[in-house]
Amino acid sequence: MCGIISYIGKQDALQILIKGLKCVEYRGYDSAGIAIGDEQHPFRIERSVGYIENLIKHVSPLGLKGHVGIGHTRWATHGGIFEKNAHPHVSNDKKFILVHNGVIENYAALKATLLKTGVKFYSDTDTEVLVNLIAQYYQQLEQLPTSQRFEESVRKSLAEVQGTYGIVVICTDCPNELIGVRKSSPLVLGINPDGLFLGSDVGAFSGHIENVVYLSDHEMVHIKGMDYQITDLMNGSVTSPSLETIDREQNTADLGDFPNYAKKEIFEQGTALGNMYLGRFSSDGSSAHLGGLQITPYELRQVERILLLGCGSSLYASKIGASLIETYARIPVDVEYASEFCYRNAPLNKNTLVFVVSQSGETLDTLNALREVKRKGFPTLAITNVVGSTIAREAGCGIYLHLGMEVGVAATKSFTGQVGMLALLALYLGRMRDMSFTDGRQFVQALQSLPQKVDEVLALCDKPMQKLAKTYVDYQHCFFIGRQMLYPVAIEGALKLKELSYMHAEAYPAGELKHGALALIDPSVLTIVLATNEEVMGKNISNMMEIKARHGKVIAIGLEGCEIPQKAYDEVIYLPKVYPALLPIITVLPLQLFAYYLASERKCNVDKPRNLAKSVTVE
Ligand code: F6R
Image (cartoon, rainbow, N blue to C red; front, side, top):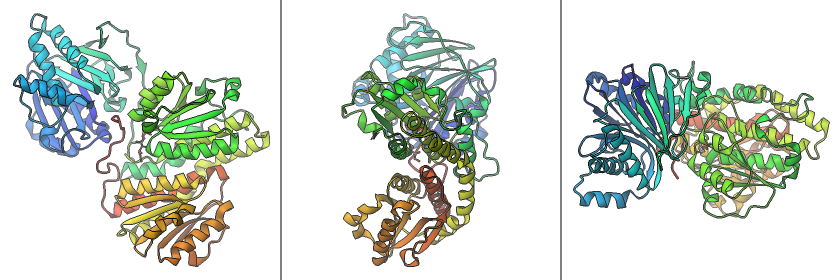
């Protein structure tokens, strides 16, 4: 939540900041702002409400000059979506300018103290409290040389702050310097011969740099011209940076011929799964090869329970993964909301292996859950898509999805990727237990054919789903129902519809509708029935009939060769038969398309749904 980009170097900062802001816009798009200047040019702050485009229109005629700058794109936490709450924020004495990603939890108490000393506030944000606190310490530390005074003021202020922050600060007395600090909100230092960058993620300066330093919590980077030093925030001791080279390709995402990222990412799922599986099957073709696990087969055999932690779509993918692991490896699996796990002191059995599942690798709830599990001494692994993300680094080992950057705020390819990876894990664990060589071979062949199947199903469903979206565009309520592994698919389908099209949607296990929610069914309510699981086809058909008997509308997602009686639905689409473990992936595709086309009919911004952000780094 909230994106940061900063630059100091030989080039003009403006274009770099604008380009960087566009790259981190997925982290929040309520407002945006920049501060630019240098030794020759006094710093100017410009801000606009809404998308980066608004900021660009606003700053284009202004001719801002400077080689030093900070930029921010906001996802509102404290204070409404107004220009006064947009970042950067400036101290009363105009000496400090600051951008912040995170939440200052004790801001009210700090603000009350500052108010007593005469500080005036012009926004409703927690950030304005911090920038004024820094200014106040700066006044008190006048005995120190300017640059050190700047650093100490930031250090002392943050010692008083409870909460989370990734911040970058300008001090106008040191116009060729920047200070960045991180605690639980990501901040990455980018390095190239022309300049130094600070960003919320490497995407913020993609194309400019190859070397990065991922700041750890409680690290402060003080940039002076082309030099930088990283110190421990608490005691000021110098830490030696570990420089990493990033793969430029991984951090760029071109739209190509697609009108938006949502559509692009839906249609590239086959390719993404193919890339993810590269080199990940064992040479005998009967199991998986998961190098990142770093757990010996012997240790894996000792595992008695698995716990999967995640949020949102990652949690729903985990629910499917749990069924897959239980079915194919016969290991009991629990799945928990990471945000709940952190605060409920769940008892964990010994020999429990914990996986955290997160596309971004930055979700704070998931990160906190990971830390809690680590504190309790359990082995933790991460399944993430973003190389070098905080969760990937803190988990120590795990599995990268390598799906390519997901820009659309709604998870699409990351959902199918996570399910596809958990299927591979189920196969791997299964082969260590009771799964036979021939069953393993069959599973591998199914996974190998998955990318092509996904392409086929997308092609098959594209037009029909577009048509159905037009038919049902004015409906206000939609249920998604499914049984077995298709229940979490139903939840994911409902989430996609809600976040992309703003239509109210709910998911139920198909058998549960009659226990209460059936009361809501009438001709104005649409129900999408996921009926691709052959084993329970009869039950699914009964549930459809129950809805039709109450004059509800039914779209059935059926399976080729398993005819559904016409009176059980209003519309039907039959998907091709696949290996049972792959049904969830195949079945979610028409739901993604339905949500996408319905949102497009409703003229919603499919890449940046209202109120949301891609990387949720607040609790
Ligand atoms: C839904 C969606 C969110 C994320 C959730 C977790 O489309 O994108 O529900 O799945 O915020 O994000 P990650 O996977 O990055 O931890």
